[in-house]
Length: 194
Image (cartoon, rainbow, N blue to C red; front, side, top):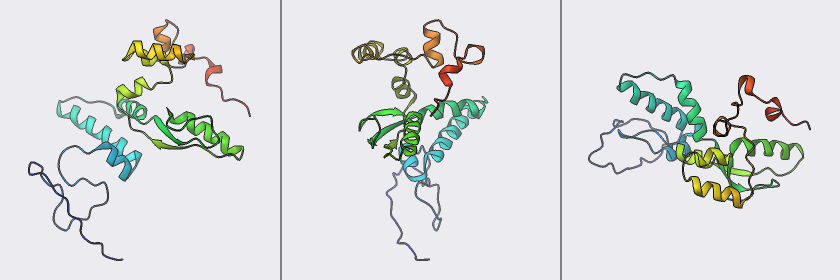
């Protein structure tokens, strides 16, 4: 194996090192104490590493206060933080370059395009905070209930959007049964036949 030249990094005086002389480090490994930039971690180590870091940090913070949270609850939140992508090349899809859309929608569209021998859309994974995730919701009612209500409703009206009421929040807002258990509508979750 060929030796690589050592790299030098400037470390602020208020930081303490997490590595020693001669330590082997990989791209994305922590060199100092403190928080890691999540976007850098995702770029260098991947989505799972960033998700794991978020969950572990939140669990650590709560544990320091003597509180226990089951990781599965945090996993639901973290999954939403990684639920959006930005379209780089729409391929043969109906997406537009720059669109921020649900990753599930792009994956489903790409599966269908690939099945038909067409060019799938290319996208970049996004990492959004909870506020941004709520605002970018596929449901304008859900987005309006969180923040910027007037702007969200005006944009929905101008765009002629229709809320399909698939999620929990939008159904609670209008006073309908939530779409789980006996309140679930199987037609909403049915997979379309090819």
